[in-house]
Image (cartoon, rainbow, N blue to C red; front, side):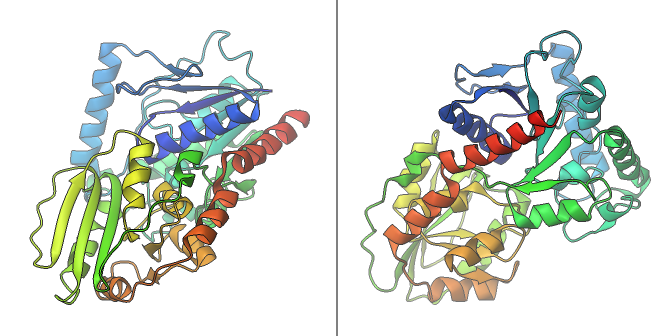
Length: 396
């Protein structure tokens, strides 16, 4: 069995998840390649390949993103109904692959074009947000227009109201004549959103969590903290990402009684300037997963105050380290934290988050880590993917 993974990027949440999924399958013995258009300086493995693009194509890609961010969407929340087709589908370079696994595909390739080009080849779509089945929004923020036609999208400017509807219509048409596409979701929440969508409704959506590497399995040395002291981790590739809810955490910290000593460890990009009397702020950017594991392991708790999210890997990473998590009741965050008995607060409610921080209780580090390793291990996740691939290929 030979599998091709396609992902726009090798960085960010979706890119990291795609790399780990491919890596876990390699460890299981599956013949895997991962192709991407990522032009960052990411060090590639032997199974990874960068799809070359001309300078003109790169310019068009950047320009398109700029235009959509500044002129089409009307808030800070990402909407990308227009996407470039960077991947050239002609030629025999795909013939040796038994199945294609598509990940985040903005400015890479559309699912419809893959279906049209490879009518007899099974396709798996691993969803990392809602863009797969909407007219372009990466998170619908409670809007349910994707269940019908995405007309009058509330996240785009009025003059572009027609664009998400047209995009969704084309996406639906692109897969209407095939039964060789299956969808994978890392959370029950995203799976249910997909099943209710006009595009995916009636098709198979399989729950397979995102895998976490063994390096997060090294149990940390519990931090020695005074009784009214807590060390909090907040992790995001972009600390200012509007979905991640950093402002809610800041508001909550301002409500924590002054007798508490709080050390806030920020891990990610984006300069943050905070002045809160009883809060010490430390900002770091980690260049590897092992660095992230070390930094999380130094903390008392991870806080995930997202206003919308699927199933951020940092939660699984923290749990595998035996570090507890306080998270917002949105998306796939809720189901994971309920599984582990961790505190959950209403999304956007800074008062409740402050209360969760003040009333924070330590957990059984060893038991938490053991349970997380069973759920998110490379072997477990790769086996689930392998079974899915094998069933699709055998049914041809």
